[in-house]
Image 1: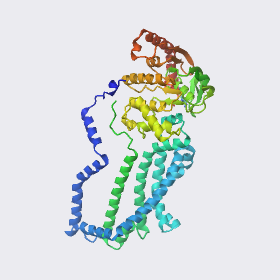
Image 2: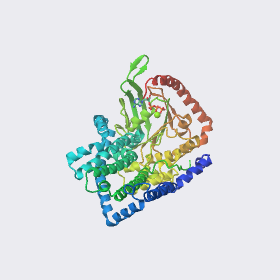
Image 3: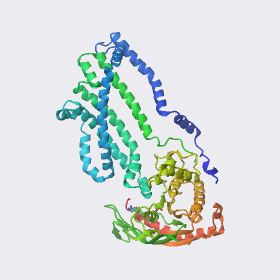
Image 4: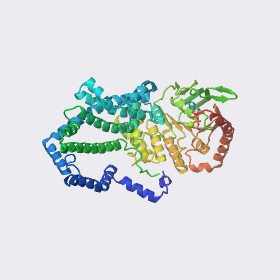
Length: 287
Length: 278
Ligand SMILES: Nc1ncnc2c1ncn2[C@@H]1O[C@H](COP(=O)(O)OP(=O)(O)OP(=O)(O)O)[C@@H](O)[C@H]1O
Ligand SMILES: [Mg+2]
């Protein structure tokens, strides 16, 4: 069998080709982060220097803006004492419980709503109404109903994430290629296998994108809730330090939150890439 | 031995609310697609189907595949009426219909997987069929990393992996360039000659229809029935050069003759079809 004709690659713009190669050869997630870091470093250093010098030189009030070194040393103390880990652990725990509950509720519900028009039609109005009610506005309600304990904080993180997940699951399920469903049916796929092996994998990229948004809002919501009513967590740490005028501690808390946000975002983007690794990679086989 | 028997098959679609179609001054919300199709196909036969666009060729395959219910009449495979997809039937589509999140190997495994074949066994089998289509070394590629020709090879390998008695193919090579198409036609014939499964192959290319077939079925314009069946008496195994022979040329003229009027009718039909949106 001769495949020679078949395997001659088409003539392409070599420059474009080379550029594409260069881009796809680099381990993307890491490479992008690295170059972003290098490019962004000067501005970051300038910002840090300004933060350090401005309060020392008396340009701004050191009571409200303690120098960076002071903030970092407080941060270090909190790390060493285990204080910080404690607060981080509590915040993350609340956010992840609420988020997990949201996944458990939203994904199956999204499947039903995406697959069976009746479910969607009968719940669409309610979902749209609830979705457009801010979780922050509802916090007093959660506190009234669930008390100021863990339940109200978990409730707000749940509420923050559930709609992103629900909407994206519905969109994912609806966007399944009808031809794939037809092909699967022609191969004798059962209803259950159709869900598991065709509809679910097609919906994954959309669900994961929803999860990424959901995780972030979950975390930010729990911080807000902790600022209003809590005795622990990063939100509490920031708010309490501010009330006590321990501004170095407050900034240490804010800095921690920023770092958690950055790490989380990086992990989520990497997770999303993994989940959709089969998407067009730019590299094509011999024709 | 008779494998597929289609008799008095009719299919009428009811349009969506608000859509209507007007035929000979009569407005209706129903559209007749198949209008009494009779066809029997022997086991091991290679049948190609040509007909104007929109005449119902895909619908005919869907009925034989058990994916669409006939309005009246029946399709039987080995004497048994088809009412749902059969494990002994495989279907190949123009747009490959590969699962983009599965590798080539996993795609071929799919059909065996839903039949409950054990992992090791189905992996071996999938590999065997990929190799048969010259895809050694491409097992772990995702469809997005394969050319159209290779994707269709994977789809055909997937279809054949279950040892089907009936292989339905709906314009499988229509999206490919001319060279790839020639190569795949030859590959398909080479493999079919080994396994001798029954093939029903829809195409718009008269050359392709003649080159592959034992018999070419010509459909009328919609509502479709069978206009003519042309037996192709060319020796096998066939070489691509056979397309330059006088005998081939005669068949080409004959099939085209049969098709020409129908294509004309279909063109009037398209003007009408554009009066409703699908
Ligand atoms: N689900 C459906 N509802 C309504 N009409 C349909 C449906 N499926 C097919 N049709 C109509 O049936 C007719 C035949 O369709 P079919 O796809 O079988 O044609 P075809 O012969 O395969 O055409 P082509 O060669 O272009 O693929 C078309 O007019 C089409 O609009
Ligand atoms: Mg068709």
